Length: 172
Image (cartoon, rainbow, N blue to C red; front, side, top):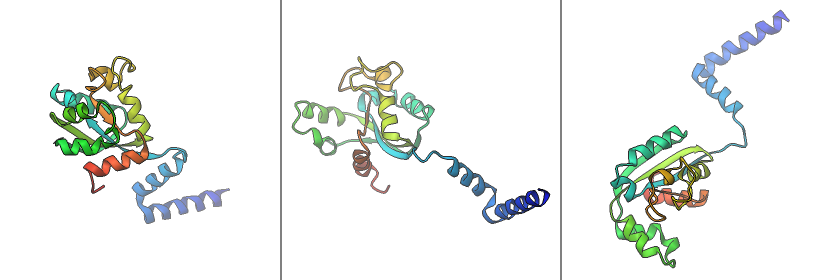
């Protein structure tokens, strides 16, 4: 038994010298990670109404307190053309023109968020599209005023997250 303990200690010391303490801790943590969990990135907007109401900082605080890593963030003014391209999927819908006008009416904050199951986690934190029916504590319940002026946008799928991220963060 004593020989086994000495051998294990020797292997441990050799591992430490080869990979370093930090890398060994990282390796241990990676080995302990549940294989069913997946780190994802998603796209988010803080919309013009929330920016104009000076709620962007409060929303960013909620994002971070809910375990998201903010990989990138930029405050931008969308042109009408950019808004049309971004919301092209809604082009035939009756609200398209109003949505484009609204989204190009003032600055937005575009974000790259990362977390386990980020797409769904962000959608859960945002809440229902309609702030009046959104759950208590969600961003839209706290900062949205109506179905259009609902403070935030989030990708609805992993595939759309990738497309939306590329529109504003094409170097990722």
